[in-house]
Image (cartoon, rainbow, N blue to C red):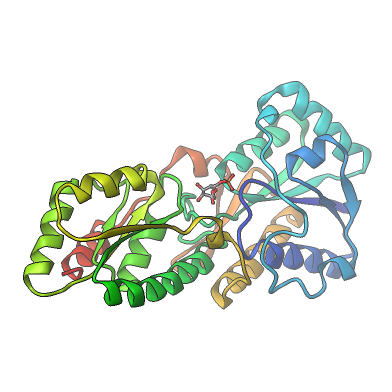
Length: 320
Ligand code: F6P
């Protein structure tokens, strides 16, 4: 294989650039040409495909976001759209493709392989940590640390004003960011979509803490649980303390990737390239039990990630 394309798709995540660098520099070592595709599948469709040079990926290992830009293209579900995009790849002589993104991006890649013979390897890049087949996705650790920084800052003001804070974090339908920021941040409660916990129970816990003269609380709320302002309103009817809501939002996706994410992205990027060179296709790379693994790319949407109930129970036990 002499020409490989690479794109980032879906929500950007810190470490995507590190992965782009790893794939591209591996290719240079093997005299293989790398082509960047801008704006994910949108750029593939609009022929925004350009040759990646050493300078393009130099000094980007520590840069957040993605130099290739990212977008979502729902129209990629249409066969004629995929056919046009595949024709663009073929016109450039691109035979292999590395897709960095979530399981939605993988589905498009799988169809490019099945319908048009483009060899594809997926790299899990999302802050949500919601992709089956890998213990961690690129960007998750950085976001976790951003949330922890916010928790510490909020704790100061929560203590000073003796308030209850609800902190909404991202994650879509996955509670990992919320659960592990609650555990590591020493929060006083956590609401995640995977575990049904009533507002009544949360209110009782807060009242119990008050009876022990603990006068402030930080409750982490995963966005997948529902509208945090509605939760705050319902909670306010049951407790007698002042409540504030903080929605962390897109701050969680920015900034320089942590060492963990950079190492993960480098290992995954290098492995994805090697797999294409070995003639593999229709697979995703992952890291399980600190080892690089591969799965059929469909594994990502045919399986669900599981929350650890032990970790949830432990976090709850320590939230008093
Ligand atoms: O999938 C990453 C993510 O940041 C989710 O956590 C969040 O729900 C969503 O993307 C936000 O999407 P957008 O950037 O399009 O608002």
